[in-house]
Amino acid sequence: MSDVAHVAQELLVAASMLIGTFFMIVTGVGLIRFPDVFCRMHAAGKAGTIGISLLILAPTLFFLDREPFVSVRGVLAIVFQALTTPGATYLLAHACYVRRYPLHDRTQLDELKEWLPTVSDEEFGRE
Image (cartoon, rainbow, N blue to C red; front, side, top):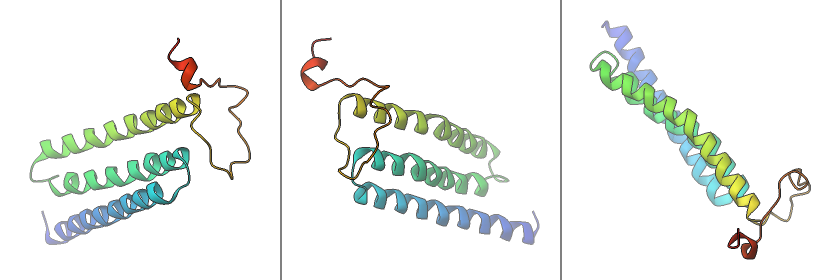
């Protein structure tokens, strides 16, 4: 590989690591600062997926010409993250809503109220 391509590859790796780390910090701040579980899941689901994908992309790019199999595993890990994390976040949010996890006081509109039934703790054990 030429020197210019090698430098470009290292810059892409460094940029991927820095941007991914930024998104993971944003995820952590969102988990701490957001008021209820639904907002926190939004931070973890969106920024967390992008952040971890970029952090996996960095070694994938680094080993692209050295160990191609490492790059294949990196791409598969990114695809797995992209397929599973949004679905898991949705299922957790759905379970929290059905179990009547409290919404934040500033929540003005609950559009799921008429479409999605909720179950109290007493009723949950009887089904």
